[in-house]
Image (cartoon, rainbow, N blue to C red; front, side):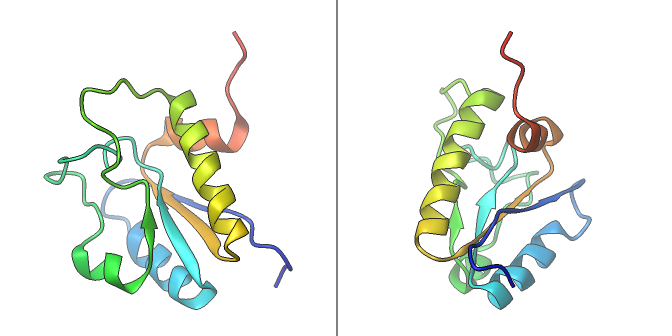
Length: 117
């Protein structure tokens, strides 16, 4: 086990078991689950996005879910900025950041960066 937690990223389509895996890892590693989905970020987007349940939120901390007002424009760059801040806070707290989502663009932007064009 490393001395310092590093972000774990779990991606894939809706219904493939990402959330269950993240929940199990978070419980085992003292982790915090972080939204990596472009729709679960938005306040009020509950239908059709398979966000975390109230029970799951009680089991382990969750960050960035339901935090963006639907009128706010959100880009992949904005997402990376918000995610970087959340991950830094989680690591500073000594916990393990576990990023979960089905938004390939957002997860790729986080993992590989964005073009400077």
